[in-house]
Image (cartoon, rainbow, N blue to C red; front, side, top):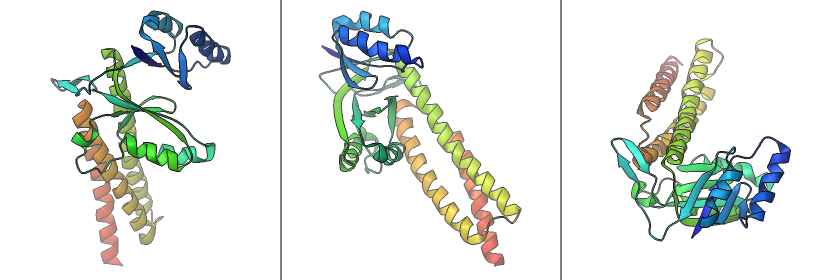
Amino acid sequence: MVYYIVYKASKDYKNRSLIPARLRVLGCRQINKTFWEFDKEKTLEVLKILKENRPLVLKRVKEVKKRLVEHGRVQDLGSLIVVTFKAPKEKKERIRSSIRRTPCVRLCRLVYAFYQRHSQLDPENKLVDAQGLATLIRELDGEVRLIPKIVVLNERSIQKLVEETRQHMEKEILDITLKCKQIYDKCIRNECDHKNLTEVLRKLRSQYVKIKRKAGFYNSWMALDLSKDLMKAYKALLRLRHYSLREKVVA
């Protein structure tokens, strides 16, 4: 049975080059950067090499598994489609921008995992899925590989991925809240004209709608409740919108 592993690259340059060499001696096959494929019987040896690099073990299964959520806590992320890619340096920012709009989990650099039953949680197809991202990468002259029916083996690893996703989303939502407050303060100091305010407000509202949609997907997939953070961002947007309407009336 084929297993996969991702790990955090060492900050020490010598160790960074030593780890791949050791993995190759074991017969492991490098797919992309810190994403490797290996045979099940090599698991203990691989984990020993990577014990200081936060390894995460995955395996491919025969059937598509559903996510499992019990008592408000995700026990199993279900089957995933892993997307790993290489792209021209000048195109990577566009790809990263697209990834920020997708409900996925970052496994390591250039390797992301999507819920395989995406359409069940996004029936109106408003979010980019694994196939959509792969199409974009190819259009940007990148090389991409999709590996379906992948599961995360260790529950601790699952919780780690969920927590990292939560932190990432909280940061995204907070960014909108802070931007709204900063712009509102500028307006109060008469440092922002109405035309600029209207344009900025339009962009922030569009950004909020996208993040809210993504947060809903994460809530269904891995029981992430981001409603309090979203409400703070919504109130900040609403205050800015009310100010904009008042200025319009005055003008």
